Length: 428
Image 1 (cartoon, rainbow, N blue to C red):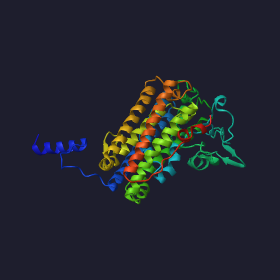
Image 2: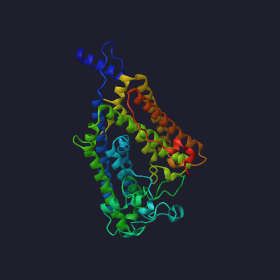
Image 3: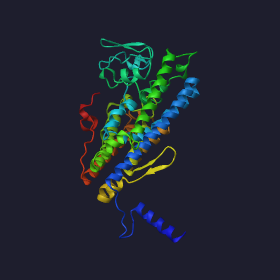
Image 4: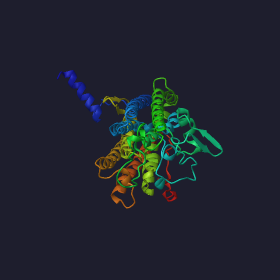
């Protein structure tokens, strides 16, 4: 190796290991550079989410062209694959208002699936005091009644789903669009409770000659329209993080300190109130499989895992794209290590611990030993402990994030959750 190459190699390795020779200390990144890289990573993540949604669209088109069990299985696999990059984007929530205003279109949950299609009334029930559209079944019914209003649903199109049915009547569980509406249409209800097994919708629900479930023509239209909407929504958010996109412009209009606070608000709120609280602890407290995030497909373990992968990518400003390349740049981790190395190291360790505990959850589910909804079951001490270990790690991670906030002289507000802050008030 040439001498110059050797010197460069040693210096690069030393920077990575934090062991530069005395007097050759690397300069910390500027807050502006950190914020700019954060925006670049947001753009790359949403771009990948859009790309995998296009693949899902193709798989669904193939299913509708030839509704076989094999085609349905391929569409389901494409849906699971599409969740991987999207879940990694969730660390951009809570600090970026444009993302929060948009997020409900693509990832709202839980949903009252009886709004969309047929359900098993024995397990689902016939009515809900909170939701007059609980069993509206728009696929079966070309007109729906909401109070004194009659909704014309003869044509299933984007306007009906997004403008009329999504959160109709101000009910958040009236979810007509996004990943989970598509998930329900691909898998159907999971009628296994906390026992093994996911939804088992037959491919013939999309058949025109041998239709099961009734109204297959409308079900086919709904699936196509809701998938097109997902693709369009992800394209919109990808553009919002481009060089002249509104999300990026909104972020860069903030002061550098406010930009750093935005990054840490997203990481802290997703770690604590959203993921540890609403998505995991609440389900364990209630022992309720309806509280699992991907409840029709039994994919919840993957969604939670990739939330953590995404948070670590944002902290370290290093994202592995879907094509295998890595986008990296100045990170808030590097800035924090320069300002408060012990505090930053505490967050590094907390994130590593969370990922390790998430991996136990994921490996247990992937192996077939115990699905996520089985882990929630009352009396399942092993399963409950796996999930509560993840909760404890996420709470510790949130506290470590708050330590970084203090060390950098910032202020943020982290989302809370009754399941963590006031568990006695959680209704059974």
